[in-house]
Image (cartoon, rainbow over all chains, first blue to last red; front, top):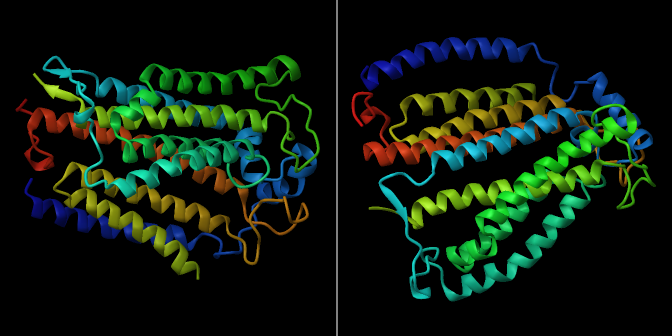
Length: 250
Length: 114
């Protein structure tokens, strides 16, 4: 099929889809006027019931914790799938540069840029831990903190070079972090089953709302997911960077 | 205001689809798919908005204050994670396609070659 015919076909189908979309969207409640019963309920009871002040994290890691288990395993399996897709092919071999002078650097990085990015690594990792651990209190949680932590390691690549990043985060360690984060979150679910009789029931003491150690299992779940997400993203980026920098055709 | 909020979502969806159909580069195609997916974030967050309401964080406002819908925000978070994984997998497939066919143009990828 030639490109012109394909685009014409799409324009015809797209016009129909646009009409259907407009029809469907017109049936939604007006912008700003939606009053979902569940949302109202959760906003009213979340602090009293779960002692968490961030309703979004409470939904993710408590009310809807089972869905988050699924979401987490989507991330886990897709990173495994990516590692399988990008494995060493028969016609390829990995060739890490032997000398430090061959270190792969981010193209165009100047000394000042390298110094600045390396200076940002520490604060970013601290921010990641903060966002991970305060998920139940303020905006944030495991997914956001996990991506921040992975970004901290990516900065090592941008500032220091790829081999430095790989030394700091060897594949085996990153895989272990990802797997134990995923398993940890599942174990918290089993904890609910064992100690409270319901899978993913919040089985720990709830503490005082607003304190760091409060809201029962929510901060623990958040930390476990944060570990998994950091591992998953670092592994994902390393696989792509391996393709660009290390893997060579025989 | 409804037209603007929901219209943005619909527009992003259709523009992204057009990009997928007309793209001549697999990586561009993946980016277009992520634009299609980002229309769902706009739609979810627009539905959850309540006029004059605060964020659903009750750290410094009293519990039960008028706040936007936390459930669609949690759904959006799931959506973002799924999008990241889909994009990563498709980009890995693009890497392999480039290795096998030596091109990223989807028109050149014929089933008989390789």
